[in-house]
Image 1 (cartoon, rainbow, N blue to C red):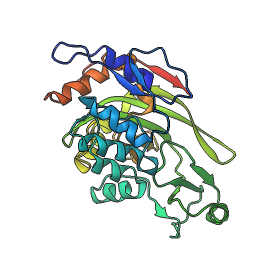
Image 2 (spheres, rainbow, N blue to C red):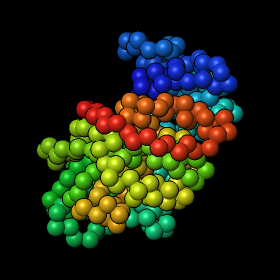
Image 3 (spheres, rainbow, N blue to C red):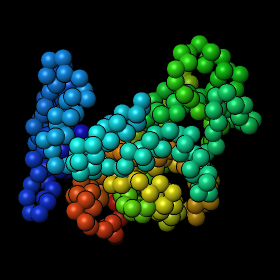
Length: 307
């Protein structure tokens, strides 16, 4: 994601000028061959101090961070605290969507179909196909597990530290999809409709492949869903993703349920430029300079990302 974003940003123009790109880097990792200036933490420098140093020197900041442990919300809030332009969703929107339970509650209030869920201390409704256990603030499929029975789920939890919140959901069979979306002030423009391939190995889910543009037959229903999500979460801004599960062959959308909302770059972004034939980073910068949501009429070309 970092490489794709930097390459896209290097091709953008703001008021006719190319941006100067700076990115933080772990000193244990090699410097990638990318058109950016990489900054490393100084000896004994804490991450918050590094962020502050970089944010102070920037005009705009595009955070790349997981929601886990509030990392993305904290970084986003720091950008606003230093009065710099945040190229991402508001900290408030991030805090809501980083919690799968809070997201579900907001979706239910807005009457947007979503996969039901409950806290681990609540007994969920019976599920003949089993249960899914996921961290409340997890990113992607990290630490997401499948259990045939609720008692088996509880037994596994009994052996884990009790310092992390989890959510339990019924396992729903269906086709997994992710939506790449541009958000602006409670509105949305759907960019691509992507199919996800997720495998289950030793009760652990793993995202194996994303096929951008592979579910365009459902575009009308997905676009309507994206607009409803944007209205329910008005703090979403710029690029984001919506993960859904589709049951049956009804392309009208009655069988689409939201799994989670990602207020950040997603893995699908890696292939977005090639799929659209348009620079998605430029679309986001255009939003920041007072533009409106674009209306893209091009049909995305198929692009496959293998993880």
